Length: 309
Image (cartoon, rainbow, N blue to C red):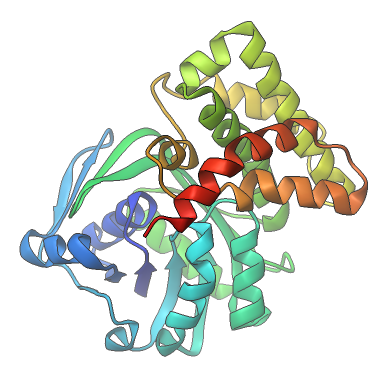
């Protein structure tokens, strides 16, 4: 497959790098010092699954230079998705489809609105990875996993082709028959650990081990789950327990990307995670006190970060 990875941070750099390492035709959309470093010495990925380098690498900051591709993997932060959806248009051919690997649900909705429902699959990933320096990605925790699927739950050849590409790359992959429910399960999890990690400024091991913060984490997960059920999402009843079991297996040093952004004074995905849950709760008449607390507490810093050039 000819695969464009739009955004070459922790998520795009790792998964795109593994696909390229396996021989897939991958072009990376990146910019600035990161792109310059990749052109100079390739993409370096340090990983608990084994380090590797993609050099030479096909990378550009001009999507028009890429031409038509079979699939675009969208791996930018949520607030960049509207811009990315417009910028990727030169890569969209007659049979191109787009898969978001972003946090939250806003990216999916924006891609459907801009590109068209027939061209968009639902999707998400699990990994703890980040850009450590220009041209360098660090994968520090969580077994890499990707899931995607047709929004109507149907089976498709394009999804099967992409699944085989990830399998060749040695990545755990799943084609979901209810991708929106699967995305919501990730949403329930990531909003809770991101928001509370940012408020407490602690890694997951501390957050889950102190009884008071663990209780707040459980309450946030239950709150997020209740909002999803009220919105008609087909979430299994044992979702909160499954998520807490997963959290208990995460290496204790891991932090969420939104948490790292906030702790380092950068713009974050606060609006697309905890902010979205507050809005969704309001729409379906569900109280969201934990998310309101997280959102209100972090909003002053978030607004300041957005004003910073």
